[in-house]
Length: 141
Image 1 (cartoon, rainbow, N blue to C red):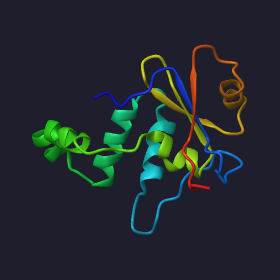
Image 2 (image 1 turned 180 degrees about the vertical axis):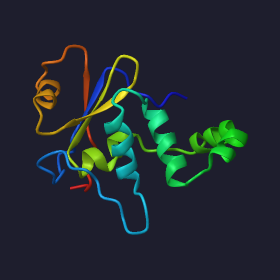
Image 3 (image 1 turned 30 degrees about the vertical axis):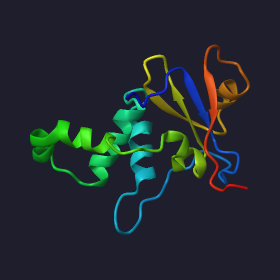
Image 4 (image 1 turned 120 degrees about the vertical axis):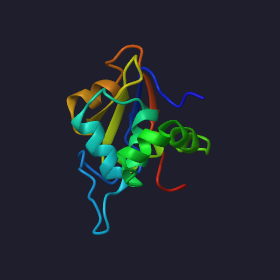
């Protein structure tokens, strides 16, 4: 099953409270999934597909060792994707922190802050052949 988007832009959710793209905080107890998603995607734009980012966040959040991944990497991947997952439309990045997500023709993603000119180009149709999807709302209202 392919979980990736191609030539797609995910907008900020309609009920997102952030006026600008904001860095998600960590908690006292450790890293949060939104902060890991942000760190990976912001530090290396267009490196990860949705699947790769979700998996990398999973292994970092679970603090799996390099040794365990060396020994069980394929098994960990298969186990992770054997269960239904929410896509990045449901991520806190577009829902709460003001980040759009662009997927290029290779399915690699980059974050686009809500306040940027580039964001406006995606949402106002200034980019050809890009499917625009809304980030999922936080509430069902």
